[in-house]
Structures are given as C-alpha cells and as structure tokens.
Length: 328
Image (cartoon, rainbow, N blue to C red; front, side, top):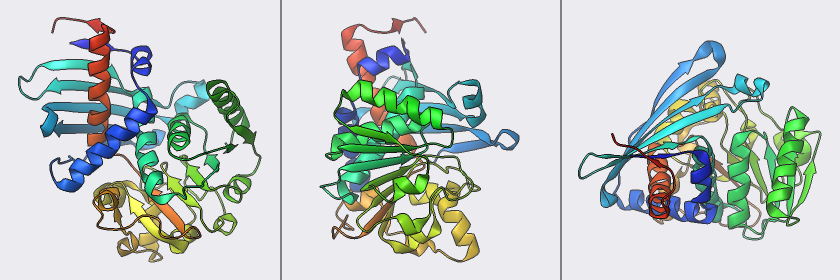
C-alpha cells in the first residue's frame, strides 16, 4: 500500500485535470453507469463540528474509495486547519488496499473542481470579477477552479477576520504572479455588488450579504453552510435566481440550511430547485440562458468525487515512484 502525504499529492494534482475528472464522473452519473452512496454524517453539536464518512465504488475503473473527513471550525482559532481527512483507495477486482492518502488538501481541490464544472454551465462566459466571502481553506480551491474556467482578472475577498483574507490574498498573488488585481474589502456587500461570480464559503448561521446588492447576471456558488442550522445565503437570492442547481438533491435536502431553513418557514419549496448538475450535463435542463439572469449552485459534496479525484493522483504518484510503499 502506498502512503501519500499532502506534499506528494500536490505534485500530482492539477486543477484543470481535476475539473476534467469531475466532469467525466458527472457524465457517467448522468448516463447511469455510476452510482453514488449517500455519505454518513456524525455531528458534534457542542463544537459545531462533525465527521463525514464517504464511500464510493467506480465500476468502470474497478476501484473503491472511502474518505473520512472531520470539520472542526474552532481549530482555526489555534491557527490549525478546520478540515482533516484521509482517503483509503482499494482495488475493485482483488480487494487490495492500494493507497492511504491525505485528503485534507484534496478535499478542498475536489470541492473547487465541482464548483468549476457548475460555473462552466452557469456563469457568464465573460465573467472577469470573482468575489469570495469566507477565506478559509475551501476558498483556495474555489479560486483555483474559477480561474481555470473563466477569464478572471479581479478578485475581491472578505473575511470576518481580515487577517485571513490578507493571508489568502498574499498566497494567490504569489501563486499567480500578477495575473489578478486582488482587493481585500471591509464589507461583504462590497463583494456582492461588484462581482460576476460570487462564492460563499462560510459556517455562518445567518446570511452573509444583503441580496439587494447582487446585480443581474451574477452566478452564486454556495459551498459553505453544510449543516441544517447554517444559512449563509440571503433567501431573496433564491427567489431571484432563474436557475437553481445542486450537486445532489438528496444531500442538500438533508444537510443544507440554505434550503432547509426557508423550506421550514414556507418561503421556499424544493420544487423551485431546477435539478442536479447531472441534469445539465445530460441535457435534461439548460444552464445559463441569458447574460442578465442570476444563477445559483449549491454543493454539500458527494462521495464519488473523492474517488474520481484520488485514483488518478495515486496512479501518477505510483508511476513516479513517489510516496512511501509499505507491506499490508
């Protein structure tokens, strides 16, 4: 079995390849050649945290993966990662365990890749300004994905603790060497009012912006608020959106407070969700229709993505002789 740490994984992952792998998996799902297993979530209420167990089997390639991820937001106060994870990759023909992989960074990248696929179908092709509210770990994957699928020239960042936004700005500046004009702002509505693509990536229990600032033509990608009690999106955004698409209906209707809270209040109905991303890829529903409409994508993640992202990274690392090989 091959042990792969984050350093080796970073060497063998490119966001462009991750987006392609995720889109191919979504195509397989749309065709019915793959099935996904719902994840199991154990909440640690007193910490507003939890553990997620995410198994998947990819029949066409004959491999299985199970990821265990923990999300403990309070760790950021100690300057530690809120997300920790491991993925076990196994051979679907022999049952052999192939790799044990650090999944912390790869989780961030696969979440970004999924948002990138959604943006390809829902964001305007001329989108040049990206805004991110919430500058934790997940923001990095979101930014990398959007830079891959749209000609982004300007990045606006807001975080409740401004130092995190400045830290992220410095990282992005170094990584992309002047490609972007990057601004850290003091008000989340400054982000909402000036962008073509808005990413929300928070653990907030109340909306993080005022919908009246969202301009026509904006694509909103909501990837935070992964628990029923969390709500980072202004409900008015849902009412104004011409196209509402999710990663999985089952997942968002069980976990996403952005939908569950307004549904409970009677101000939103599940019937207002147009469909899943697989429906767009399969051509069952359309993506963006006009430059002026507001589009909305909500993601809570699903198990299959971890499998399709992890497998090619393992293959490339194995071919390069990277990682630690142990007898099992």
